[in-house]
Every structure is written in C-alpha cells, then in structure tokens.
Image (cartoon, rainbow, N blue to C red):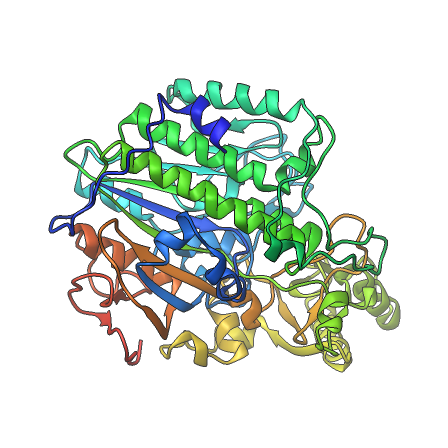
Length: 549
Ligand SMILES: [Zn+2]
C-alpha cells in the first residue's frame, strides 16, 4: 500500500492534523463499502483492528446493520448504500437476471450493462447505469450544489456504477489488468495512468507472502475441500508474476484501489472547495478472498489485517491534507465460510448443494416428465430467481411452474419456494429488518419484469457451490450470515458508541443527507435518518428504540 500511495500521491507527509470537534458540515463524505464484510467478521476482528478500521470503529457503530433484502449479492447491495432504497425500488434484483423479451440472443442481463448496445452480451458488455431506477446521493448533492463532485473507485464495475448512477464526475474500476471507466468525454486524471503503471509493474513481479500476525498464524490449518478445490486455510498470498487472479484475491487489489482514491482526492482537490463532495470507495478484495479461501482461515485474517492498515494509510493522507471529512462504512452483503470448516466448528448441517437443484438440470428433468420441449427453466444457480421458458404455451408454463415449485419444495435442502405472485402480494415490511419473515426479505428485492417466476431459498448453512474448481464459498442467501453487515459513521474528532439496535443500509443516505444539510423529502426514500449520528428532521430512528418503519 505504502508503495502504491507514494506513487499515486504527492509527497505523503503523515502529519495528522489535531482534529477538534467540528461544528459545521464536512466538505468531503467518504463512503466505504467492503465487499462481503459480514457483521460476523466485523465482530470477530474488531478487537484486532489497530489502524484505519479501529479509527472508524471509534465512531457510531451499528453492529447489527442489514442489507435487509433476500438477494444478498454485490449489485443489489451496492444499489442500496447510496440511494436510500431497497432493490424493490432500485430495480437491481441480482447481479444477473433473465430477460426473455429483450431480443438479444443472450437472454442473461448483467446488472450494470446496457444490453441494447449492439454486439454485446452479458459477459462482453457495455458498462452502464441504465438499470438503476432511482437517483444516488451524489446526484442529489449535485442537484442541490452545482459545484459538488461525485467520484467512485472500486475493484468492480458494478459497485462503482451503483454507488454513483448517471450524473458522476469520475468513476474508475479494476477490470483485471488496470483501472478503467465507462464515462465518455471526461478527461482522465493523470493519477489514473500513474497508478495503472505502478500496479502493472507490481503485477509483473512475483510476490512473496504477506507477514501473518501471531493471531493469524494461529488460524493456519489446511482444510480439504470437496468438489475439486485444493485444500485452503493456511496461506499468505504469495503469487507468481502476472497472476492477475491471485492479485485480485489478495490485499494488493484494495491497496491499489485506495492509492488511486487518494490520488484522485489530491488531483481533484476533493473536500477543498465551497460545495461538499462525495467519494465512494468499494473495496472488493475481501469478497474475492472469501470466495477463493472461505472466511475463517489464515487468508481472511491476513486480508483484514492489511485492509485495516491500508485504510489507515488512506485516512492519514486525508488528515495530512487538512481535509474536513466524514466517513460512512458498510458492506454490500455478508458471507459464510466453507461447509468443510463449518462442520469442524460444530455446524453439523453445513453442506454443499445437490447439483441436481440447478435450474438447468431441474428444468430438463421436469420437461421430460411433462412431455414438453426445450430446457424448461432458466436461472443462474440452484437458488434465487428462476424463470419459466416463455416460448412454452401459457398452459404448459403453468403446468411447469406447478411442477417446479413442488419439486423444489420436496427437496431436503430447500427451505422455501415463493412464486412471483406470492411475493408481489406481500407488502413491503415496515418493521425493523431483524424481524422480517423470509417472504418479506424476498419482497424487498422483488422488481416486476426482472424478478423470476419463482424464488428458491435453500436451507441455512447450505453452500450453493458443488463444483469448487473456481470458487469454494459464496453468499446470496436471505440468512443473517449474508444479510447482517456493520454500518459505521465517524468523523475525526468525534467519538460515538456501539448500538445493538438494528439499522438498514438504506438508512445511510438520509443520515448522510442530514450530516451535510441536504433536504431529503419524507417518503422519497425507503431509509430513515439515524438519530444517533445526525441531527435528523423527521422521520428518524432513535438511538436505542426503533419504532415502526
Ligand atoms: Zn461475492
């Protein structure tokens, strides 16, 4: 990180300004999303944090935050953080969905693409915010203060797009070899080329292991994994030259992302002008580490140690520039560990999914049983949104839907199946998110025309990956290990306390709006202002008691 930072920023002087308790609104809002940073991981590692994450955790902490909807994936999660709305309003129901009416030969649609661009597919796509149905915080700021700038830097395009939307000043994301943008006609800051050159030189070299603390070394234990993967659990991210996948699933990606963010702060003079700016930083490495190694080994321990240090380095840059800033930090979703290690920890129900539950295999089985043609069902996985083949007659679609719901429900690994009709008929819940039923969680990520014909929810502790040759662990369920995320607010010079009451990531926008004095009309967003953080005008959530919402 230090090497990247030195390259990306002018002389980095770590002379932290002595902060006083501020009485005026901050000039720069920094919003961190740590991809796959579950509240379980935050609770486990909080006593270990020494640097940036410890500083931010000295503010107001909601340790029971929620990405409250069922579809706990990167795109829906990022769509809630800076819009104040659930995916049922943002329209971002998943990372991918199926559009059988779109007219493209590839019926799969990527959440952050414009599928109307000729010659594209869901894998070779044109990055675009076109599917995001609501304005972002940056857009509201720019409407109120014409001089406000909205900037995003991320390890993933979809995170940067969903945190900024259509009206954005700079948006940079890692595409495998370098940081790129989808913005046309926007001058590229010099620091982007500089950061890309430094990272390319770093990637071209092999990398030795990161240093593991005694706490991390105590977690090192090789765990055999079913389904084709090598054992995991004892690793410190040594990699070969040019191994971009290993670079991405290591602390190196976040170091590069933070260095570029710091460089943009300098070059754009963020937080230094009359109107306030917002900088969204989505740090993706924790997610790639979780998918590649699981969440409870030495690898995740080293990742979170380095992330703590690198966020500290970034905050030190802001301090040394004398910027008046405030921070919000959360995650797009949580995650769970590999079932093999969960069983060793006593979770006897932990298991990998039966591959027969995949939409493709289930569809072919039912098509044969019913004497139909085609593939029957479309879906990305063995859970979540599943679609009926719409080339079948209306009568056959109904027969197939009934048969599919019955077949999934009868499977011992399935907790519940809801049809689109049942979900649409469910009111959006108004109770705190820790009290929502499964169908209420499903309702919060249901959007007509994009959601499936039915939704499959696997039992708790089932990992929906059978073939582990690429990824071994994941998220995406409506269970709390995937839904519960930390929500933190901090400003240098201010200390806060830890709240055990639940908060929702949709509460971040109205809260930050109150922090900078931006009026958000009541009822215009799903979230509520958090009174423990800001001087809210109604409606708000009080610090200790959460009423109907
Ligand atoms: Zn992920």
